[in-house]
Image (cartoon, rainbow, N blue to C red):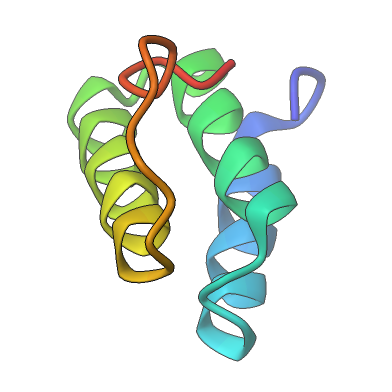
Length: 68
């Protein structure tokens, strides 16, 4: 995600299209957006990740707003 962040963003988004509950894909997406300087996309990914966890009944934690 750090050496080719734009490609990592695309790969993580594709993975999430297939399986929206894939924790690792959410984390890669957030990290890659941050590395690419995509602040709005990173914020959107964080909200999506939080919503996915909430849909599974996983309570937010102190580190959830920034899961990395």
